[in-house]
Image (tube, rainbow, N blue to C red; front, side, top):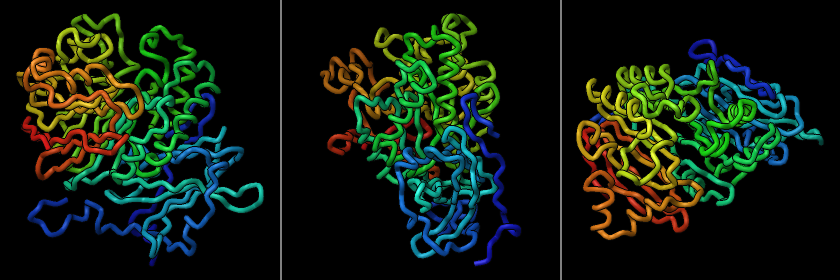
Length: 483
């Protein structure tokens, strides 16, 4: 095959970020249509030079490459790739496409490392396609070894309305290892993974070495070893990446700075000005994912004020306008802490959206006044799986929130009350119609987005016995159908 570089889409390495202690240098179809448009990726030809040797025949070396590779920040033409190797000054990145019969090289590039870490921002990819990648290096014996191979799919281009399979989790504590819920997510063969915070519990860490040790322990779990290479990821943080929420806002600047550096060096997320990472990622006409920072910008002293600050003014204004401008059927707000209006006295409200009522209401009023349809909130933190309406009645009752449940942590008693209590108790505590499902146990959560049907099918599996715990289909008009 003739290489298309130079005639169609030369793959540019727009920026290579290497991590030092001081931080990063970073830079569709409908049922009646027999064929999908080329913007969905099926007809794109961005294969490169045919590979004479299958890269997967290179010996795997998990001692040299002890952590799984990551892909993140997927757009229709770009991705952020992450790698880590021990005791090396540089490693080689290879990106390819194709299956067992023929593979085509897309990129081959030597990447310098600092303290083992690298991030590479790749531009010029085709929309809606699956790519494979791995990191390579010569070991001490002179034989080339490789990391675990990873895969990612680029986001859809405008006009594509293919379905999207999403898996999501939060709260993976090493004391509940191994993270079998994540291994089950990898088996779902998802298009993308949402990590909604508390990915690593670093509460006792103080130094750079402490944080790195805890991060490496988390990523070394079989769950992350299975899931991170299986697809690309969008991630936000919560408190435990830094320190427990009880002391988060009293934690000194030095410790928070060290923890922030560790998060950015360890996760495939872009680092924008002012340590910002909140942004949106559009998958054609199917869904747009709004990844929020619902932790670091809060000002707890303001929470009862008329100008309560849960998100910075910059982030709030961006979110409102981006929601209004979105052309996707589903507008998915990915945030670490729930937005649902819970029953009175159920849970301390100060550590969630409801505790900053003025700003919460500002956002919900804007969505209602602008007539924005298809908003779905996906949240973590509460250690329970759930499906609920943001409000029991009124305009916001058509907006659902999916709590992804703990990937690996203890359960929240409120889920037990909902699941095990009598019908009368459930009605008294939770009211009628607002909560479709709550469960206290660890969970494997999957969301299948269907733009044509304007629906998302949500499933919760028990990771211990792999049984289906709950399933429902949510529609953009506010309907929900169990099963």
